[in-house]
Amino acid sequence: MGDARVEGLLRTLAPQVLGALTRRYGHFDVAEDAVQEALLTAALQWPKNGVPDGPRAWLIRVASRRMIDQLRSDQARRRREESVVNLAPTDQLLAPAVDVHGADEDDSLVLLFLCCHPALTTASQVALTLRAVGGLTTAEIASAFLVPEPAMGQRISRAKQQIKRSGTHFRLPPPGERATRLTVVLQVLYLIFNEGYTSTSGPDLLRVELSAEAMRLTRMLQGMLPTDGEVAGLLALMLLTDARRPARTGPDGALIPMAEQDRSRWDRAAIAEGSALVTEAMSRSPLGPYQLQAAIAAVHDEAPTAEDTDWRQILGLYGLLATMADNPVITLNRAVAVAMVHGPRAGLAVLESLDDDARLAEHHRLHAVRAHLLELDGDLDAAVAHYRTAARNTSSLPEQRYLTAQIARLTRDASPT
Image (cartoon, rainbow, N blue to C red; front, side, top):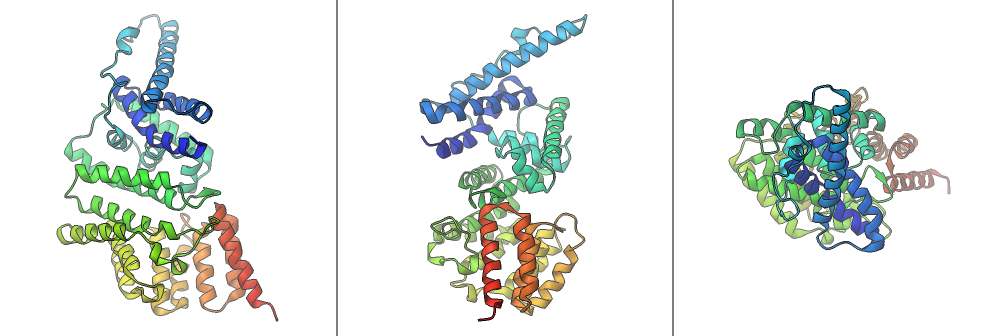
């Protein structure tokens, strides 16, 4: 099995293995470290030696050994430091609650809610879940949050310690508490999906294993909460967005914007499922942000051509969405809809409200959208300047190449013939 396929398998198995160890031993913080060591061992051995029979059980076995060694070492250290031993004997401390080597249970959803523990801040809940359940690296999470990598590493470490101190049990929270955590759970799943759909760094635009895992977990969540409108809305949004994936890149991996995509390559089955999901959810549930975003995606997907897009309907939906969520990305997308309905200068005026928003002020997407609207308005020099800033501010190579191509095109068009 090639390195890429091994990486995808490990990413899928990682939360299952972490869930199994945490259910067996507790000690979430130690379990997470042990699983990371087992994953590293597998990443080094499996491409050369082949994937073992029962890869999940192999990872659990290796991670369990690492964890037992660490727990015994910690216990021995405490015995040396304390004159009175307060810990249980080692055999009791390490006694398994279940036979995880033969268990087929997937604890990913339990792990998801554990990482969204109320003892953590929202930012820490999201970061920890992206790390433990989504399998993102600390660097990827830092990029998603627009913070330095060392700061994100400290945040994740503190979150694990807080989970340990909380003394929580490894099980789904009761219904009342579950509702409180659900908002963060949905946010986490959406961030994982977005990292897979548009990777924040590296040579590839798409990381299909991440978006697929986010959709898998969201389907699991919907199975547990089948009447929740926002869970259905999020799954619909993922389906409607992922439906365009086959047309998003060219044969060389180059980014193709939605307006230029070959819509015959869009996944019509996913569009039909997503549209039906969001229509049914909006008919029986109070409106929520994910339902509205899914409805916007459905309007895009149902247009036969880019020119047929019902931008007035999209703008109306963004107006509703803006009343529910203080999110600069929503404002950014609404600016495009405003420009398509009322002209580029109206869209540029909407963007001005984001210049002082620290969450997005230097993000490449703000500069890229501004460049696009400036180009539509005929100010090519200013458009080129913002395309250049956008290209400098993104770590995604496909996005850099696309933005650089826009600079070259506009520079060429502006040159005297």
